[in-house]
Image 1 (spheres, rainbow, N blue to C red):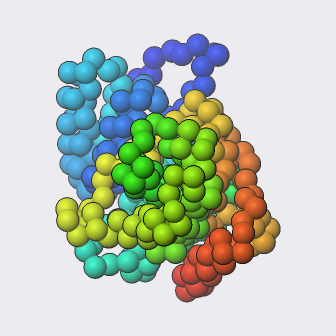
Image 2: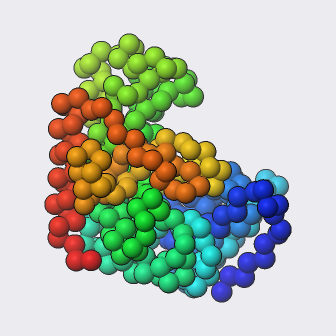
Length: 320
């Protein structure tokens, strides 16, 4: 069992306890990036594999020590150690292999996520949950249904990762600073994602002012396909998803009210219900504080509806 000794914090500071379930490469990177950003004084890595979270925690702590960062990462195999957590990230499950789609993982990971969420209900029933396990949108739906939590407390990491890839392609195509680029991707975290050039910009200037439609269409396709390419080349995507997770946690912990595309449950928004899918939302200390409904044109709406159908078809075969 991981024993936590917390230092006193002033009452004016928001206090969050962060737990990351799944200590593989993405979970480890999420803990590392969260520690580098000093999002909590202690971060818990949980995993059923004995030794893995403890070893990962040791490795991260050694790096943090050299950096002079006073954040402690703990490793545990005991779900009870997440008691009192405010933010729980679920990365547990089988990873995507070369040649696999995210949906290929559906049956493999559904039972794992159900079991993990039951443990979260038991030991951290006041937490917000950030699902990461693929296929992301169905896993976020399972998390919402099994937990019974208010929908504001369930928001999956998908669009944040996709927009980071879209931003990189915009950077490569325009040559402009990454810092000046804003991008948006909604829909399914998968083959039916919807990068939105019309809602993307460089220093506030619409992206269409820099690139012709043919090039924009190319960037959209590249964004949809790049994850498979990274997996083909190195076996897994690691650093970008780890960072995306920490960015979402940061918006919660620091109450940044950042607009982030997350997989959250729809109840009439965009004309859909009974589905969990990526939409832009204001993320703060209460989780999903507001879902933002974009005025999609006909082509964009058709793409979004296609993504909704894909996710609904997937979740229709899941027993919850």
